[in-house]
Length: 534
Image: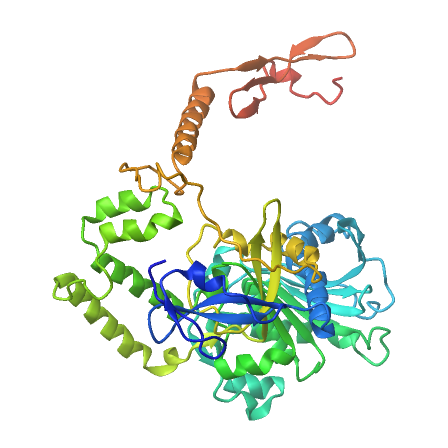
């Protein structure tokens, strides 16, 4: 609340205010637009930018949103559903790492429908389930409802995937361009190292299994189908780079990347991909904002706040762990922080910060690290618009520069969930307009407006003392579960086995605490063979 906000001089009269709400209440000039706050890269503070909301009167907007909603289900189902269908419906062994079909009969055999998961007109053509540093699970499917071949790439779901996520240093694409058919067109361009290694493996595996080549061959009934590449999270980044690599062979392909990482391609190449790549980001999602520059900015801002503290850090920690109404933030900050620019710079701590920043800046200027990476293609940002009864969602056209700051909010992780995004995209109605500004404020009275609770709340969210009660309840439950399995039998049950001749022997005994378990005992060794028992 305390930062200065400057209105974008290209759209509005230049002004400076300290209340962001007052600035955002300014009516938008276009009925199909939304006002957003953008962090100022060159100076502290924010400025307002007017963005175009997807319009029901624009055929391209309607088509892109419809396709994004339709293909999002593939980005979700590649996580678990495809494997389940291959195992339960098509007899794939549990320990198998891939699903193959006979390449010679793949055009005539229609017995591999995904109907068991509600996709009656979709067939599974090929799938890989092996997950390594380079290898990634993906599937090739045939969607008869929209006449498209779909390549779905799985996102982060294993330790190997996290390792790939963190390899975000830029690598040159010079050699890749020559191999896939661009010639020298990709020289001087760069890509996320980990994603590039995955995309190379995907490209080679698709070439090796020849499924796409067969589906688009001259004798194929599917030769006029579209090709769509989709993925979520890390899978979205891999889908983007794979699309770039496949495009010389399939010039009409489209890619939909759902909540991809924020550092995939360099600036110029990311812009050149707008023709065939569409990326979708929801609300405050953290992943599309994870870039080296954003993380370093967040680190620097944290150090600045620490340097501005006028009281001990433990007292600050106790303060910020207690709920505070938005209206009171500026007043509370004034009590624990020096104003910007007034904190002493002649301290050992600030000297260490200055030295560290200088070393990092020099290192970032060297080699490939200096290249900034962005989200490629067109970007649709879906924001939540909470109402009095339900939450509605507004999709607007963003650009790759809008995600230049990590947003610390309680939904920054939950906004990344693909099931929620799938439901949201399918529920959006472009005919609905949101003509009012919505702000989330706490309900406080004048009596409690300036009252702060000066106590430490363990494991606070921070939403008061409820998390403390839940924490204590969980600890008690864990203690009881341990005791019940060691010394308690809340329920005891015995069984008796009756043979056809009337002979009876003790059967399995069962005891149950907070955890249930069974113990099988053979009192009489001769009675252990129970093949004829009832």
